[in-house]
Image 1 (cartoon, rainbow, N blue to C red):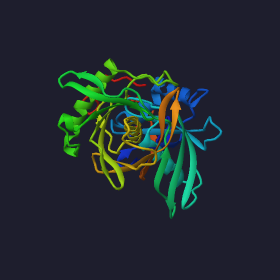
Image 2: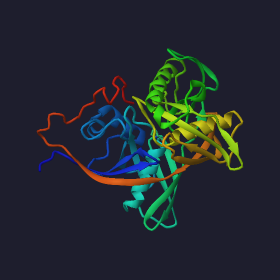
Image 3: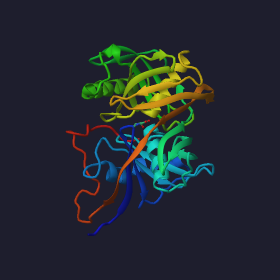
Image 4: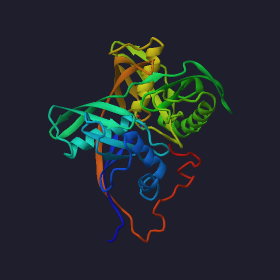
Length: 346
Ligand SMILES: O=C(O)[C@H]1NCC[C@@H]1O
């Protein structure tokens, strides 16, 4: 066996969504800040292509690169690589990273609870991991400040018509639409139709509504379309189902932590969800995140929430990714039969 590189990966999924973690074999990228390091990874593309593209990856795969933190309050930092974006934050990926760090012994586990501060490119997150018998059984994440952007905006979507939508930031940027009004029950058999609809809505939202993070003008687009059910209220609090369509064309198998954060910001802005009130979110495969608003804050003068999301993650394997120097496709490849083309990275 010969190899020009060897990348050590612990594979993981959080409530169904893949979030593999690179634990060795890659030097930290250049950059003064974690955000700058993540921009280098997005621009350079070598690592993204190697781990995300076929034959090693696929459009369903997310990969997280552990790097030393820049902020002294954090025990570890990481850069998130998703199929189209290198985003500020990701809920499912943060659950995978916390679980891999503790279950593999990279950071010390304390039972029954381990508290961590992790640095995502979009800011610090606080982790409370519930651990038993050497296993992280569930993880609560205090996400980055999240806020509603445009409420009840009119959006003209070619082939669909005029929709009323909300846009919001929850660590990543969303256009949120009522799934039932579009005829969706949010069941697994609708996945391909949900993707086709969600991609059209995201494209229209970027053209007509746009998004720029007020403290980070580099994050200047809407990443995802969240097709969401109406909220139900009972004695336990609020609950809803969602399908988040991830560019270039796949559905989040988890209930999407950044999506839950964005939705809670919208619900709070509309007076429908209060601080500390439980919000349970279900995915298309029936997995669940337990969420709530921990407190209120502001982002550059805009009202914002401090979201908490909680879910479970499981390690699925370990891998060593190799590159034979004679392999004619060191960057791999994407074909439009499984990987819709034409979306640029950011
Ligand atoms: O949980 C989340 O926030 C995400 N899951 C995959 C895409 C998003 O980053």
